[in-house]
Amino acid sequence: MSYEVALNKAWDELAQLGPGKDSSVRFLSDGYKIDLDKRRVISLSCNIPAKDYAAILILHYFINRLRGLPQLSSEWISFKELEAGEIYYPAFRKRAIEPLVRKYGKNPEGIWQVLERLAAQKVKAGDVGIDLEIFPGVPALIILWRGDDEFEPEANMLFDKSIAKIFCTEDIAVLAGFVAAKV
Image (cartoon, rainbow, N blue to C red; front, side, top):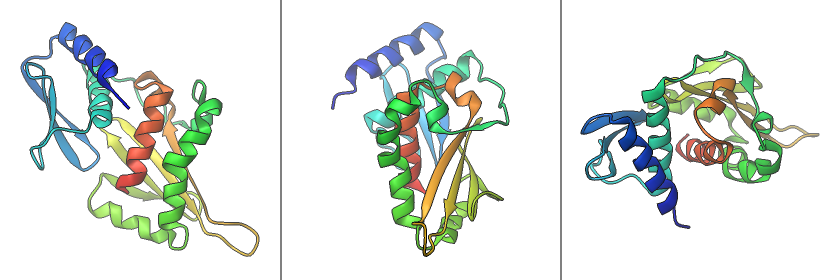
């Protein structure tokens, strides 16, 4: 799949905002340098270019940060509550929820290991919950439930309602898959 059109559009939009030669963004556990002149997003931890889908998310976040991020609403919403979220939910579930269930379904407390390497904290939600900062000012709530005789293990990922002012629904689905792979 080619991300060239989305990348070029983001770079062009960023160029119009004129943020300077380069800037950086924290995305989960890594920092990224944005070099407008070379049109590259480079991981600061390993000095390699970000994958195209990650670069698009980083650029979209950075563009919105330059414009002014919305205030957190302190209202958690499900993916289905986003514009066209019901339509894209099967893809979201496959990218984000199913990997969480596979990884932590038998041991929900295992997710607490991410507290050592990501900006996250335990919260009271489900059987196990963490509040995770994806980008500064962009939190996600990951909730895990243990299985029992009646129900299989389950998971969910909720977002502060303000995320819809930063990313489109498709970006949020990709972002959630990225988060699920990193936790």
